[in-house]
Image 1 (cartoon, rainbow, N blue to C red):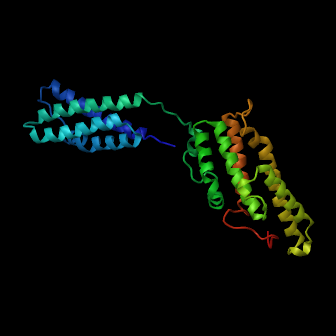
Image 2: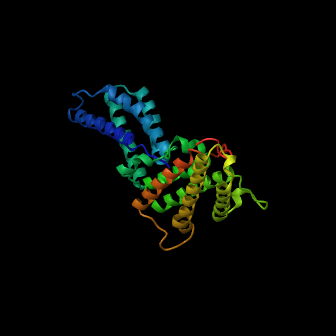
Image 3: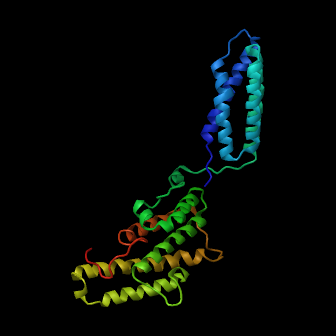
Length: 289
């Protein structure tokens, strides 16, 4: 997401306006009233450089060009000026051109306001927490994009990225349970194929002799963990993923629905991350809870 430092620009424009106001007082007093030389120097050097850097970051190339010309002109006039008034009038003129260029660049663009209750979602690398970030790194980009979509109220797009994030978790779980196919890698298989294969693995675990595990309590905990995960993946697929993946009239979500789905997805992936990771696997049979 491209972010704009609006407050910094506002502060610069406020300073430019203040100095221009001082110019106006100086002019009305016909040079008899003093003007802050320090303010003039700061505007002519530091503030214009800040405005140029801010404009470059934002891609305001018209303003960048005008500011560059102003800096060159002011630098030359500063060396030529025989008295303060000459330089002040040049600074006033150049500032006016700079402000006009900035306003013109602003007028050509549209800005999105992020509501206060969504500001926390913007550009969050660990939106679902550090454990999910560490255990499911390939889901990171989609989780971050889901947060950005929630922030700018692109709710249906947020759900789309959330389902992609969950799919990375599904493939990690399939790897953990040693699911494999003779005719292709895991990342070539459909969601339904992986869920079916995993359910078969859970069924085998349920039938496993208790002697293969340290205790029946550990076996029950392992079966419960994987069975619960499979129910969740089935629900994700039936409730949201299949609908969001196809062009259907009712496959749209509002801000509240998307937030609810994001909250559910976060809770599920946080729970899954207590045992499952893309970078390691659990024992075929758990040795502890």
